[in-house]
Length: 331
Ligand code: EPU
Image 1 (cartoon, rainbow, N blue to C red):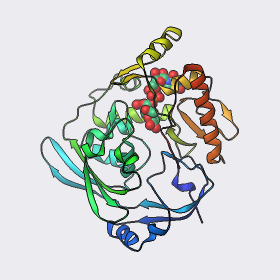
Image 2 (image 1 turned 135 degrees about the horizontal axis):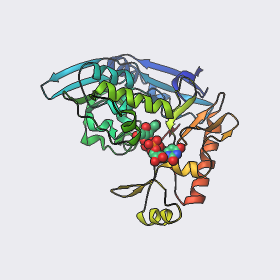
Image 3 (image 1 turned 30 degrees about the vertical axis):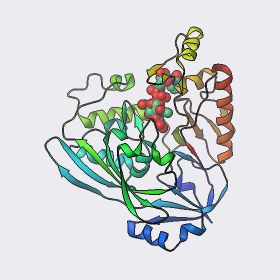
Image 4 (image 1 turned 180 degrees about the vertical axis):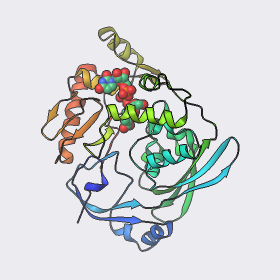
């Protein structure tokens, strides 16, 4: 039996039968050929920054990639094509790209987790999503050990979503991700908080944009090293335009954004309106600076987090008629 404490940023001390790490594709293929995963259930995780262990014990193998490496496949005056190991820490990779003059990822600075999971979850922040920069995802079939790859289109990227979370869930292990980044810096500065943090800063470089993003995140989001969390707990819901119009009549100050399939309302705003911001239930609570984040103040069980999330969902449903969907993966 092994503790999963250091494999999840929520800081839940769940246990599993065994944690297995593989350092090369061959090592993973070796486990597959040996039939290790045919007789035992397996859960593949990345940095554990977007999952919630809801049980106290998992009778399964938790598999984690230790495949590292950053390789320049080709480089022109316009762009660069990189192949990156799934286990690379996301933010170290972002920092490395900026240091080398490869641009596009500054807005995604300080997002916890690893490169492999970034391609599954389609991480996003401040007007950028990682899928904009992903060309191809290399995978190993967990049944056959066969190596293949999916093009950007085959990954079916959407808001915090990809084919790996649906049709292909559990089928593949992501081993490498190919990125195409720019050789010239075109800043994306759409978010008010970022605009404010950059006021008076000239000339705007990628390194400075990264610093601004880090400052804004640090001011709003807990550092998993200090307080357990998995970042945003819920997705921002998209509701029918008619419901949004109705809500705007009673709440004219409600932030809202028109999207292709309706109106997006920030979940953090809905949760705050229901009085949950900063509220605490025993060891768990809603982060006082960002209502979208549920935190573990220490010693919480997965079920404590599940319970508070259900309370929040019920209140938002009752008060606004809006269904909140978790962004975090429940295990
Ligand atoms: N808001 C509130 N109260 C709150 C939090 C937010 O009223 O407690 C309102 C704000 O006033 C603002 C709006 O909600 O009008 C949006 O807030 P914010 O810009 O902080 O972003 P968010 O929608 O709460 C999303 C992502 C974050 C990402 C930020 C910045 C999701 C689920 N979350 O949060 O991603 O960093 O935008 O782009 O889309 C994550 O996925 O873990 C994550 C942190």
